[in-house]
Image (cartoon, rainbow, N blue to C red; front, side):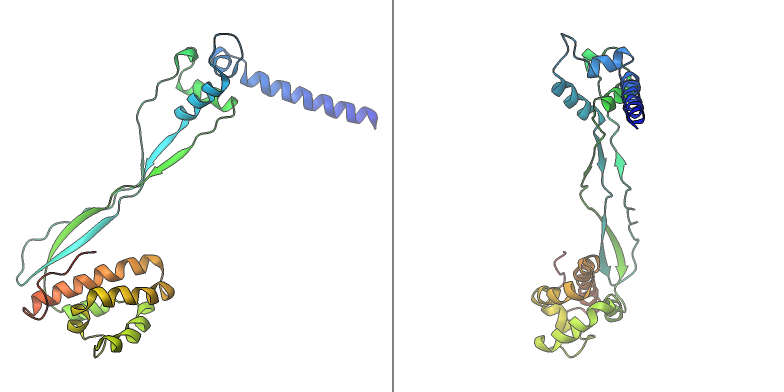
Length: 225
């Protein structure tokens, strides 16, 4: 039993030594992880490694489409597609004290020093695209944009604002700011966050459409969200 324990400890020690030699067997690794005189402090070299291994990624750009309604057909502006996440490709310099390293060897040596790569995602501002559409069938369009999860909220609040029913667009649009904000609390309970984010902009689109389809029924332009 005693012999078995000794052999197991010897095996662990040998494995550790082999692993250390694998990380410290060349000049690049020594310059990054070594302790000889003349090298920067280990903390400084670790910070250099962290900076070198860090990757910055740009998030997906979301495109907000705003619809401009007109009474007659006009050319439309194409919608810009959302961009996918991309990583930065700025070349990073290897520290001068690691003169024996190329990029691959330096990254490996940093791993031997216990430094791991990190990724930071940077938010990208929303892009805005404008399309032109003919104002027709606006009531049907506005009602169709209301998600099923939001219908109970609308039915609950319509009477409070003196609106006849879900199709009474003029009543809803004339009070869109107060009506919209009050109904949001109900929508946040019944619908997902992504759905809630789309409801107000869609309502504004319906109101703008109706104002052009029936001139004088509503203000010419409603605030965007």
